[in-house]
Length: 68
Image 1: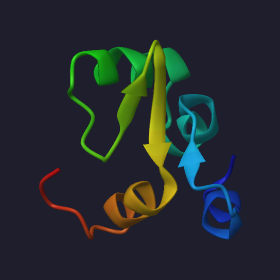
Image 2: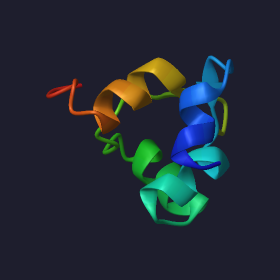
Image 3: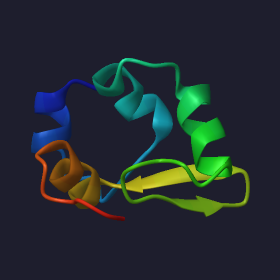
């Protein structure tokens, strides 16, 4: 997804594949950092899946979240 698509989306939860283009990395990097609890934006794990709340990700990207 592009940044514009993320902003206009109605999806409450995003997947690593959907934010990887905006982050400039491979989705597996996002998954690995989530497993290590090292992502700088809100996320949660459900089984083996990493899920990113869209509103929290947008806030972080816009500089609204300092500490997660």
